[in-house]
Each structure stands twice: as structure tokens, then as C-alpha cells.
Amino acid sequence: MKVLQRLGRFCGAILLATVISMCGVHQVYAEDDDSELPDYRIQLSPARQDIGELEPGSTYSGTIEVQNTGKNSFKYRMSVSPYNVVDEKYTQDFEKTTKYNDITNWVAFSRTTGELEPGTDDEIDFTIKVPSDVPAGGQYAVLMAEIVNDDDTSQSSGISTVQRVGTVLYSNVEGDTHEAGSVSENKISGILFNPPITATSIVENTGNTHATATYVLQVYPLFGDEEVYTNEEDPMTLTILPETRRFNTMTWEGSPHLGIFRVKQTVTIFDETSTAEKVVFLCPVWFLLIVLVIIFCIIFWIISRIRTRKQS
Amino acid sequence: MSKMTKVIAGLGVVAGLGVAALPLSTYAAIPDGSYGQEVKTEVQTEIKSAVSIASSQGSTESPATIDLAQLNPGGLTTDMTDPLKITVSSNEANATYSLYINTTAADGAMVGTNTGAKIPAMSDTNPIAAGNSAWGYKYSAATDFTGATYKAVPTDATLADASLENNTITGEGATKDNYFKFQASASTTQPADTYKAEVVFTAVVQP
Image (cartoon, rainbow over all chains, first blue to last red):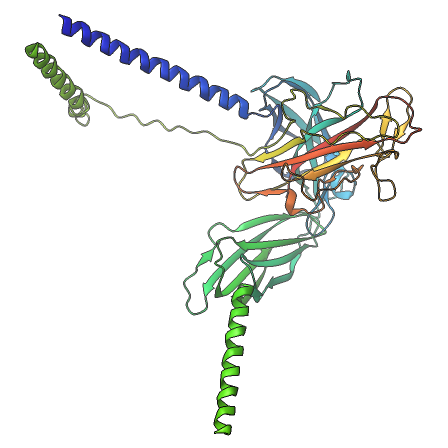
């Protein structure tokens, strides 16, 4: 009987220890998870939305979701801004109005303000009432959600900050649209002192609706056709807005520090495809210096040998 | 005592074997089309793309307003020990996001809440310095602010730093932390007041 009692106590102790340790682990994880959350975080989903064709005189209905993924509750406000790009690097602009963002006047939200507790979200419906007399072509806007800062009670000088996040809205008004574009630059550098191997390009959209450009980078050894890198199965795609030029750099992140490769970049927009191919010599500066020193030494040795022979 | 131990050990072994054999016997008991029926359930969900922006400042619970502390006439606010951290995140693959900054005041100035007097945005000719009324921000990708210098907060949403690459995050589940410090200075004749400015941080996906 004593043996059974001891055995029972032993099992009980193990069970108790297990339960305590599990509780402890859960508590620690819970604290860690909570402490990893930022004080305030507003999230908007989706990050981009291509709503496709809009018929003049029609009404489009859509939704976006505003989420509180931070630690504290906040009030939020919805707004809509024009969407443009200002240079070849596609630096964005949310102020300037052009013929491609009349849509900002057509958007209406089901609600423009709200309050979210941590871990909750609001689904915001929006409608786009397209006037019947609008010209055909692309229309772009950003649907913004921002945390409202109502903390004006502070009596000391300070900076009131607002966090704002946006969903880019792409659309195209039906009618007399024309699609035209070209690849105006497709370059690969022949000599690189440092990795990675890169190829650049500029794609121009001369039409009045947005288009998708596709970028493929293929790297082969100097001799042979077996690719050492390619993104052919998952090519990079970028949206090119109407009447803009977009600069892009394709990169082979896993490039070695030394080697000679054949690099090929293929860029496509609409039906136009541009292909550039070049032999790329990837060589660090220190290696180049060593090679030069060796060549210098060989020349010096040859000259000294010739002199020695002449003297003898 | 040894008998009891043997009995317990024997029972333990039998129980263990029984538990181990349980799955085998369960499979054996379900011949095709007789006693058992196989039901396949497809579980599906959709995760939409999202972009988020977060802010925090040291242990402060309310980073919405950054207190620049005491500013004396002819003085300068102290360097912020806890910079404002703005984090941009996204779950999209192969997408790029950028962080923009602007102030809502048309002239970019801090405004006195009682007198309407202004502390203008800093410039090359109007730097942040004791005895000079100016304010601005500096940006860093890390908390050390090495090489970062103060500049005026733009009135239109502008990349937080001149280098686009430094403020662009790429890749699935990408997160980028950005750090900001603000500072203000006042001339000896700057009217006594509480000066405020609103700064907007905007995170938007690139097309």
C-alpha cells in the first residue's frame, strides 16, 4: 500500500508540475505577444484595388476594411485623395489634380468616421457614381484611413502626429481608350565591381489607360545555356500609369562576388518586347588590383630577363 | 513490494500496447464501403492584401502628441531621447511601399494656440538654433541617427527621406521601422504661448 501511496504522490507531483509549467509558459507568451504590438496601428485592406471598367453614368459599389491591429483603441477618419506619380522613380503625389483623378469627386463612403477597439475592424462600403459625360481613360485615387488625434489637452508645445494609410484605387472609364507604350531603355552594365548583378529599364505608357509591364531577368554562365538564375516562372509585374515613364531595376540577389555571366533582360508592355543581352564581368576591385600587380610583375620579369641576356 | 512493482509494470506495458494498437484497430475496423465512410472536407480561406502603419514612442502610451518639453525664449528644446517610431508593414509579395511625411499647416509653421504667433519651418537661412525661431524633423532608419540632420517638414506629402530606396520596403511580410525626432528653437522675442503643429505620416503601396 505504501508503494501505491508513494506512486500516487509521485504522479500527482508530476501532474502538478506540468500544469504549473504550462500555465507559466502561456503567461509568458501572452505577455510577449502583447508587448510586441505597437501602441497604435491602423491597417487597411486590400492594399490596392483594380476595380476594372467603369461605364459612364453607372454606379460601382465596393468595400474596404479598416482594422485596429495595435494595443490601444482609436478613432479614425476616411478620406479620398488624388493619385499621381511625379517622376520616373514613381514618387507618389496625393495633392495634384489631373484629368486622371476626377474619380476623387465621384467617391462616397458609407461612413467617414468611426472608432475601433484593439483587434476589431470596420467594413466600409464605398460607391463611385460615374458621370455620364466623362472622357474615357484611367482614373486613380487613394482611399485613406487615418487615426484621429483628439489629444488636444496638452498644455506644452508639441507635435501632433497623424498616421494615415491608403488603398490605391485603379479604374478605367469605358469609351475611346487607346493602349500604347514602349520600352525606351533596356540596359545591363558590362563591368561590376560589387554584386548584385542588375539590369535597368524605362518603360513608357503613351496611352490613356494603365498597363502592366512584365520584367524577366535570366543569367547564364559564359559558356552554356543552363540558367543560374531566372524569374521567368514568376516574373516581376509593375503597373505603368498613363502618360508616365517608369524606371525599374531588376536584381539577382544571390550574385557571387566574382564571375563572368551572360545576362538577359526581357521587358514587355502591351505587344512590345525588348530584350537586352550582355556579358557581365563581376570582379571586386581588390581582385582587379591583384591581377594588375601580377601582370606588372610578369612584364618586369620579362624586361629584366631581356636586359640580363643582352648584358651577358 | 517487488511483486507490486512487477504487477504495476506489467499493467503499464499492457496499457501502453493497447493505446499503441488503437489506431491500427480503428483502421482495420473500416473496410471500404462497409462500416465506415470517408468524408473529405476542404478548408479554404482568403487573406487579402493589407498595408498598415504603426506608431510608438518609448514607453509612452499616447504617442499621438509628442511633447517637446520646455522651450525658453532664446532657447532650444532638448534632443528627444525616445524617438517616434513609425512602422510600415504589408503582407504583399513583390510590392513596394513608401512612407511620406507632411505638415497640415499651409506655411509649415508651428502655431501658438492662444496668440496665433508662429515658429516658422527651418531652412538653410533659418536653422534650428538657440535665439532663432525654427522647427524641423530628422529621420533615421535606425535609432542611432548617425549623420541625420534636421530639415523642414514639407507641406505636401513627401518621401520621409531624400533617398527613395531608404524608405521602401519590398517582399512578403515586409516591415520597415523608421525613426523621427523633432526639435524647435525660439528667438528672445518669440511670444509666450503653447505652440503646436500637426504632422501626417502616410503609407501607401506603389503601383
